[in-house]
Picture 1 (cartoon, rainbow, N blue to C red):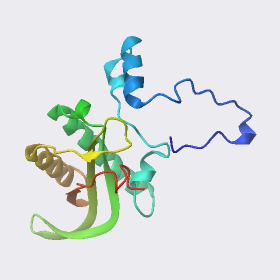
Picture 2 (picture 1 turned 90 degrees about the vertical axis):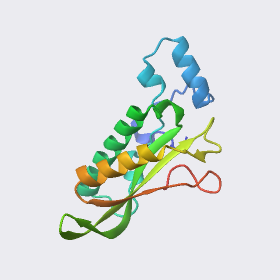
Picture 3 (picture 1 turned 120 degrees about the vertical axis):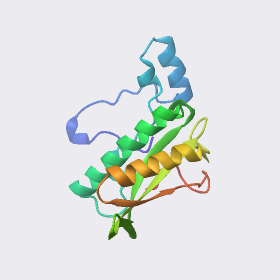
Picture 4 (picture 1 turned 60 degrees about the horizontal axis):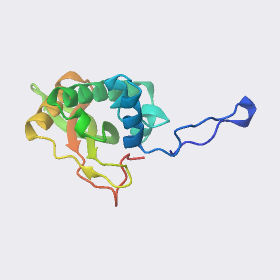
Amino acid sequence: HNVGGLPRKMKLKLVEPLKYLFKDEVRLLGKELGLDEDLIWRQPFPGPGLAIRIVGNVTRKRLSILREVDDLLLDEIRKSGYYKKLWQSFAVLLPLKSVGVMGDMRTYENIVAIRAVTSKDAMTADWARLPHKSLSMVSNRIINEVNGINRVVYDISSKPPSTIEWE
């Protein structure tokens, strides 16, 4: 999905035996085959990687920030027991900065958006109604543990009209 074929110069043949199965069907097959639960319930991840979740310039520093945020987010989602209930959850680093206060100092740092959706097949998706306590924990951890972030927003858009990923 959303991925082109292999470059011609590689002279490889693409074999996709599960191409026409939906994610829920792939999960059922994984269970039948006895695959590890973590593998079966892994959330979709974009082919281009985290770069697709950085709106604007992609730099090593911005990738590092997003990687930290994403790790914290997924850690908290797992702790809350919501990981398997969500189709997908991730962070998006925005090309905006915001004024904030840390201690006695004013800051001007990045904004990160959190996206969590429920779906059966990704053709449509609804924003996840995560508990306020979980959202508060995620926000506090990100702002206090990740240098360069001073504001966290939660995306409450459904698909359609929005898409699951931002880019």
